[in-house]
Length: 229
Image (cartoon, rainbow, N blue to C red; front, top):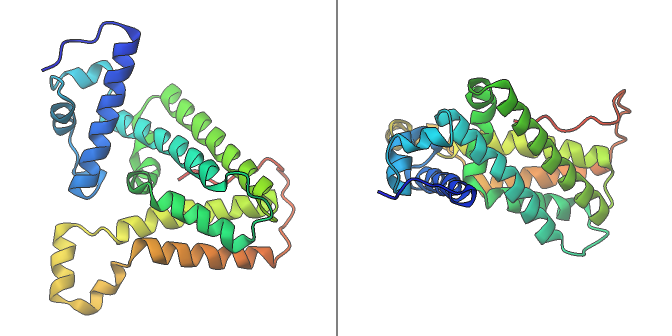
């Protein structure tokens, strides 16, 4: 076991180590629902009670991981865009899809944030998540608007669809062992375990092209943003 962190830098590193361990286990086990605090602390090389010094509970740990995912998605989109301009809606959707597909644990967490994580932490922690996730969202919107021919409202709609579809499709395409066995026994039911990446990309491109041909309705709140899942 590693010694207790003393400095601010050491504590920050331990916090990141716990997040890395949680993400690694989620990837290996097929989803965050299979990850336990004990496994995370063991994987990070910490005492099993050590996680409490950094996160009040498992939900706070996963919410932090989701918050980090927003930053990773923001950075991935900006890197993919580079200095491109004048992108067509289909190209924008391709970038949005490919970048979120590259963050499978984030896609998984988007479901759990809404279902349980936000409601299992104190208000100030929930506030921080909302503030940071919306900030990342707004940077993504601004970057995509600058690089494309799409308006703010249409980019926001595309991102709203992305968040909802990525969250739902990831869960469907990663069935539990019981469901996976059931699909083997009854193949006609297995179609619901769809191919996550290609299906998400295809639908988002169709949505983006459809949005490009519509007139966005005026909202009473010009600051309206995609609902965070």
